Image 1: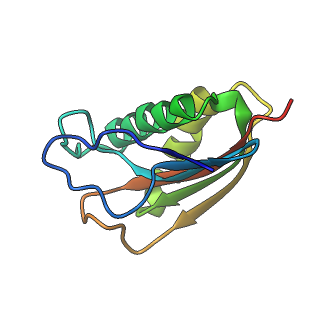
Image 2: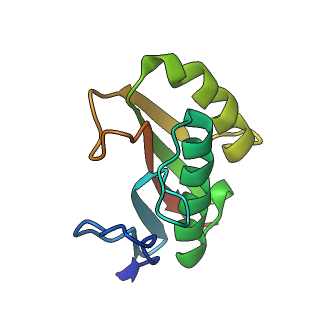
Length: 127
């Protein structure tokens, strides 16, 4: 197994986890929040989503994968009102079809009260 690590943004203490773990042809990506490169968490859902995708892509790349390798994605939202916007942004970021299998959950809270979204996933590098 190999562990994928990307540096945490300045001022952010990463929790005790690996951002990704690769075993064989599978890459498991931990929940990625929407912090930007400076460690800020934007107020807008769209900005957080775009940061999640940027950070998620970094973990995929470090693990030798790309978006097209994703087989399963879990999306956690703190507001049901963001589902429509998430679907639009998701289609742009994770497309074109076929998309990975996906579960979307609306949760009461995420670790930081300002977090609006977190995405985790599994990629397969088998061809």
